[in-house]
Length: 65
Figure 1 (tube, helix red, strand yellow):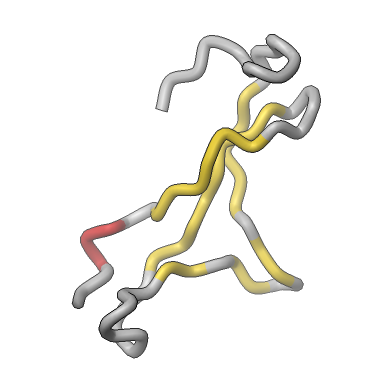
Figure 2: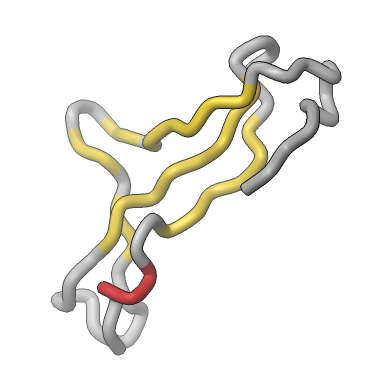
């Protein structure tokens, strides 16, 4: 994903991060088959102001219905 600047503060220090709860990263599973393989969820964020651009599944091909 290409970002030219943060829409909140116009900063250019954009980083990729993993959303976690405690020590575990957040994972996406298929709604129909929650016992299938999963993929970590990550976000791009502004390291200057903390604005989060969105959440993305890192490897959507792993998630099977």
